[in-house]
Amino acid sequence: KAGAMEDAERPGTLEAVADAIETCARCPIAELHTHAVPGEGPVHARLMIVGEQPGDQEDWQRRVFVGPAGQLLNVHLARAGIDRSAAYVTNAVKHFKFVQRGKRRLHQNPSAREIDTCRWWIESERAIVRPKLVLAMGASAARSVLGRTVSIGKTRGRPIPLEDGSELWVTAHPSYLLRLEGAGREKQMRLFDADLAAAAARLS
Ligand code: URA
Image (cartoon, rainbow, N blue to C red):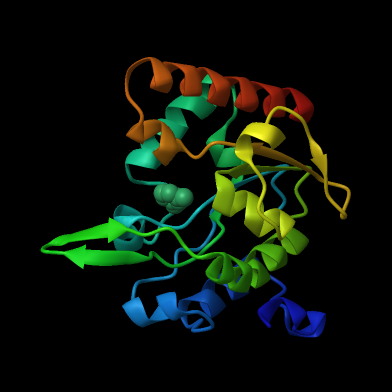
């Protein structure tokens, strides 16, 4: 199991993680031959933001959160007074998982097993960056940090202490907000804003 590998084998820099994930074939997503998308941001950022996996745009550009979900994330981070460039932004799963439909590549949720295999990398990133606060957006991100599935509704809005002294905040994923309409979307946007504001207050 990937998480059981010796600590001595962990990459010691973010550059080494970025190099290593490109050739990682520990899970079946590697067979899709997408690019690995490395995390981005200052090496000792106080805030680590974790998404689910790169999407179509992120895979082409090899950059995290540059597509529609990233645009929405930028709006909400700005609203909460969080400077994205000061945060380390990464994903639970490093490769884009999709099914091909004609010319389109449709996003597929990563399996629990794929998330757990990829935890090796997020744990390496956490050990290097050592953020004060980790913001996990969506169930895959929360599982990747905690190693178990939690309900977003039940865990959001309060800090969860992590074993390394940092704290986890769980919130919804911006892609979820994009899929909603009308009053439901408004409500979820407000909850997302409240989560970001609460996390921002812990950082100040
Ligand atoms: N969704 C994610 O979870 N991560 C990205 O990088 C882009 C979209």
